[in-house]
Image (cartoon, rainbow, N blue to C red; front, side, top):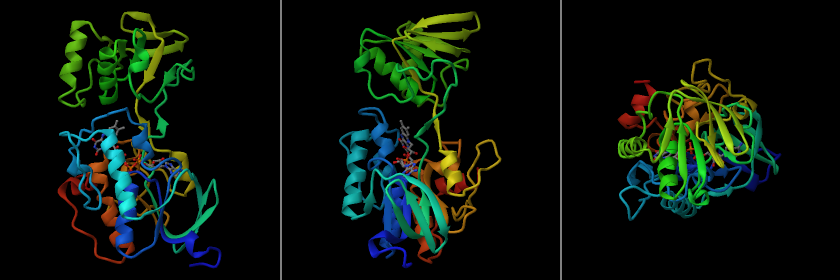
Length: 343
Ligand SMILES: Cc1cc2nc3c(=O)[nH]c(=O)nc-3n(C[C@H](O)[C@H](O)[C@H](O)COP(=O)(O)OP(=O)(O)OC[C@H]3O[C@@H](n4cnc5c(N)ncnc54)[C@H](O)[C@@H]3O)c2cc1C
């Protein structure tokens, strides 16, 4: 411990981000006898709190488990609420030290003697793990009117939109699910899709439902179309047939999210020059260009936010914990090795 910190403010490891991967990192580190604190700018598993009400994960429960704690669910696939309950129980069972609603702003010092600077104070750590995910920064459309109050980049539930015209921008899983839910809650959903069809990446059990509802005319869809402008009560869309004005009491711009690159830069992590802007890190060790500072989870993929998710990102915890505890690197499952090797 350095003289600047007391025992309760200096840890072997500080983990930034209390998402599934950040929690996995903390418990693996703690099990190896190292002290650890987890900081989050919001609540425990803050990103999952922002997901739609009763959202069904596409993963089966055992693939979302961390630290070997069994995840139970009454359903084939867990709901958002199952996962919220599960990760909270794991954090409590493992007696993790949590500092919630505390945003990390920067990082001073060096390996062995870092100072994590937050909006509430400072914390000392020998090593730091960044597991800040991707869900805080939407991919903005950058069109006039996007800042209007009836435009949102996060979809929660359909009930407020009965008998309303709702425009949904995007054609991936989130848009598909939102359009179907809105229809069934009595709204009039209309999709605006940049490409020629609903994305092939939409899950195989959702896509046919949506495609058939579009064929029936119960969900509207404009393909090869882009939003030109949003105004109160309407969205102007560039279509192959020219400009069209759609009625819209609400607009969901579900065009994805990306890691907070300015935050990573503030920590001293250089941005990659590749198309995904992959933050600089060693794929085998997850150490960044700043010695002692590690990346874990979705943030590792940069703009490629589907590269690392809970199923495979949770293994980052074992890799980092073993290294920080001076153990040999663990054998990782094939799903992780494949992503690491880029195959
Ligand atoms: C709708 C939806 C459904 C999904 N379904 C699945 C699925 O079925 N299976 C699967 O494996 N994956 C799924 N994913 C992906 C998965 O949820 C993410 O990959 C996962 O949450 C990543 O975990 P993480 O711990 O890396 O990041 P996150 O869960 O995003 O956690 C990052 C945390 O960091 C915090 N943070 C950010 N910046 C700061 C800061 N400056 N200071 C302090 N804290 C900060 C955030 O508040 C957040 O709590 C889904 C994603 C979405 C959006």
